Image 1 (cartoon, rainbow, N blue to C red):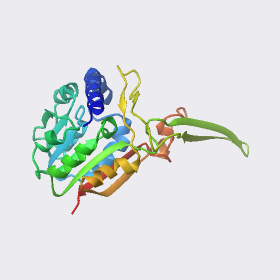
Image 2: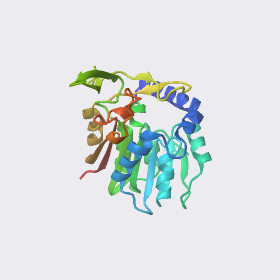
Image 3: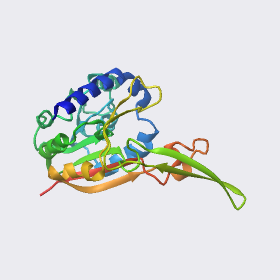
Image 4: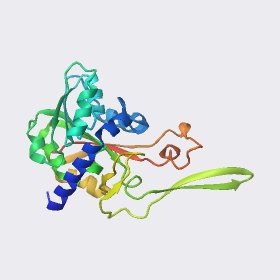
Length: 269
C-alpha cells in the first residue's frame, strides 16, 4: 500500500468513526430504500446462502448484511476498519441463533483478513464499500486465500458507469402531441480516469467521505489478477412502477439506469 493510500485510508477511518451513529440511525435495522429494494435482493440472489455456512462479511458497517445472514442460519464473522461502526453494529444485536463475531480489521490489509482462516470460508461478502477503499487488490487476494474450493465472493457497489463520482441528473419536459412528457437522463463527463473525491453520502451527514472511482476493467480486473472468476452479475435499478413524479431528479425516477451493480466471484482453477 502506498504512503498516499495509507494516508487516505486513515483519514477515511476517522471520517467513518465520526459519523457512525448518524449512518446507523439513517440505515436502521434493515437499511434504506437502496438497500431494501436493490442491494439486499441482489446480494442475496447471488450469495444463495445455505444454513450453516461460514461467511466473512468485510466492511460490515453497522451490520445489516451480517444480521441478515445470521438470521438465515449462517455463521458470520463481520469486520470493519471503523471502531465506531462496529460499536453501532454490536449494539444492534441480532436475531440469528449463532452469535455474530465482530472484529476490527482493515479491508486493505491482506494479511489481517487472511488471518481469519485460509481455506475456511464458504463465502466472503463486501457490500457498498469497494468505492470507499483506496486499494481493492488486497481484499481480492485475501478472498482468494480465505475461500474454500467453490467458495464465492459476493460484492455490491455503485455502478461505475452511471453512479460514480460525476453524474449530473437532468429532466426535460416536452409537449408531445398535446401531452407534457418528462424525460430523465444522466450526463456523464468522465469515466476512464477520475481522482478520489469527497462526496456527500447522505443529506445532513456530519462529514463527506472519499469515493474512489474505478472503471469496470479495473474493478473486475484486479479480481481476475487475484485468481477469481466472475460467474454472476446483477445491474439493479428501481421498479418503474414506483417512479415518483414529484422527485424527477432522484434515482427512484430512473428505472432504466442501474445505480447499483452486484457480482459474484469464485476461485479460479
